[in-house]
Length: 153
Figure 1 (cartoon, rainbow, N blue to C red):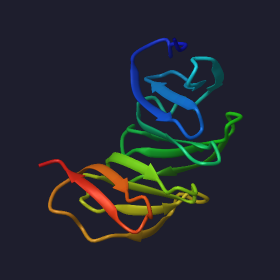
Figure 2: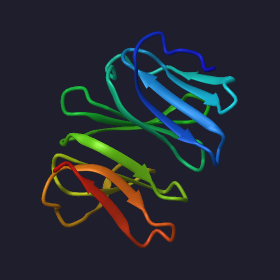
Figure 3: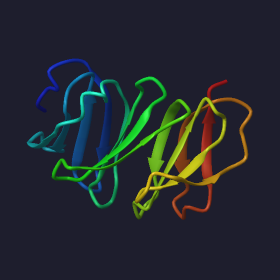
């Protein structure tokens, strides 16, 4: 139903609200499809970003990708495929989500601490209390008052 990345798909994000499916594969572009299967855009990524770990789409249809090269990188792309900003990370990210408005990115991983980042700069705004083990899953309650974490152990 959807165009292939040309290789193994590493991560997929489906947004029913925006009607899009985003997929990324090793050493290949990010593909943005409509849920009907129609290819909307191929987002070319810099060659330094070879192994995608996660991809999410914001309310503004910005694509946020996490790449697991060495220390890791976050990259934000416009719906037109332009790279808007990048940030090198000092921790390994296992999960990430955005808030409903698309202003913040919340990441978690082996550093045990959920980190809230401004999507306009990708800089940390707040680091929450550490958990007892690595963060495998994150979710926000519908009213966005509570962050639910799933731990590795």
